[in-house]
Image (cartoon, rainbow, N blue to C red; front, side, top):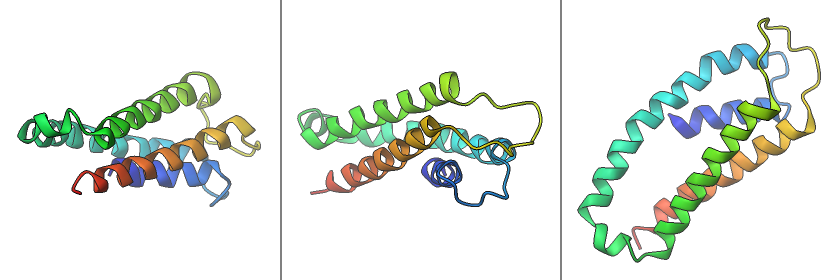
Length: 122
């Protein structure tokens, strides 16, 4: 839920589905990302607790944690400095290049987080 909704929003920021207003899409998708985060944090902690000693020394695990921090920082910078959601749904203006850079960073970082998660099994 978290990454799927984030990907859809990021793809819109990159210029796909231009007929969908960014503000309306954000109002619909971002709450789903927040709900997904609420679900994955406890499950991730439970998974860590079951194998904390091995994961604590695993480079891939720490890379995943750092990448999640980078993703969180990217979200904070985007919402704080790059894109201020207007009160109207009139998104006819072209999005700034910084929003596209943020979207690209988001997609790449989340793909890397997922890859690290899969690599933890090996």
